[in-house]
Structure formats: structure tokens, C-alpha cells
Image 1 (cartoon, helix red, strand yellow):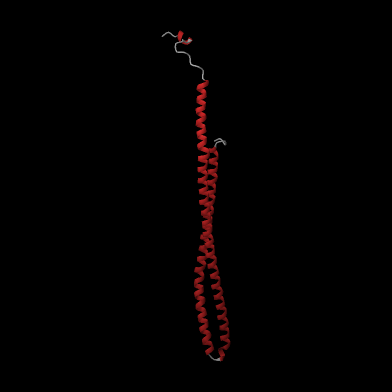
Image 2: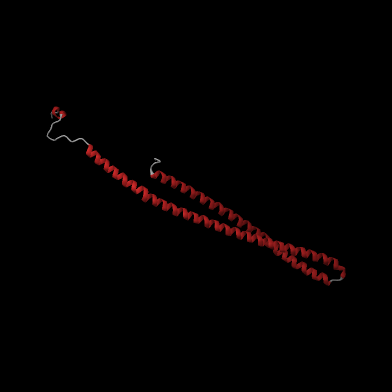
Length: 186
């Protein structure tokens, strides 16, 4: 191909656009893989923490029941009751911290999923815009470069044939004889 031909540049532009599409597609696949991994990690963490929360809640309720029973017992169990109350308080605080962390992780997972959706939409819009521009550019090149070049080539070919006819030597008269023919005896 000759670099002076418009078709050469059209092929170069098309190749560049194809490379950009491949890069955009690979970026979308990588983003989808990362989002999928994050969602799976959060789901596994929720599954692991759910039994802990139910156990912690059950332990908290049992600790409270023990504390109530301990107050009703005689003064000899007051020390034990104080220790149980402290344990219940720490357990409740731990439960509250665990619930707060789970809420934070859930919010983080939601934000990550929303951000990933936004990025996928942004990449999709970029691909649509690029496709539209490629189509517009192709149509522009077709109508403004290739079709006029074809017409000019046709005009120049006709002009060349016309000049060949005008410049060609005059044909010999029909009634004259040629030297080669005189020697031929059939």
C-alpha cells in the first residue's frame, strides 16, 4: 500500500480504533473480575459473621438472665454478680462493635458495587461515542475523499485516452501498398 493513498490511512485509522476497542474491553473485563471478587469476599464475610452475631446475641441474653438471677441470690454472690455484669457489658460492647463493622462492610460493598456500575456505564458510553465517531468519520471520508478521488481518476483516464487519440499518428490510406505486402505472394 502507498502512504499517499486515502485507503492506506483509512486502514491505519481502523486498526487504531480496533486496538482501542480491545483495550476498552480488557479494562471492562478486569473491572468486572475485581468487582466480582470484592462482592464474593463481602458475602463470605457476612456468612461468617452472621453465626457470630446470633451467638453473641444469645450469649448477651444469657448473661443478662444470669445477672438478674445473681441479684436475687444472697449477698454471698454479689462479687460473682459484679463479674458477670462486667462480662455482659463487654460482650454487649463487642456485639455492638461487630454489628457496626458489619454495617460498615455492607456499606463499603454497596458503594463498591455502585462505583463499579458507574464505571461500567461510563465505559459503555465511551464505546458508544467512539463507535458513533468512527461511523461519522468513515462516512465523511467516503463522501469527501474516496468518491471525489474515484471521479477524478475516471476523468483523468478519459482525458488520457482522448490525448492518445489526438496524438496518435495518422493511419495509412487503404489504397496504398506496404513494402511487406508486395513481397508476399500467396
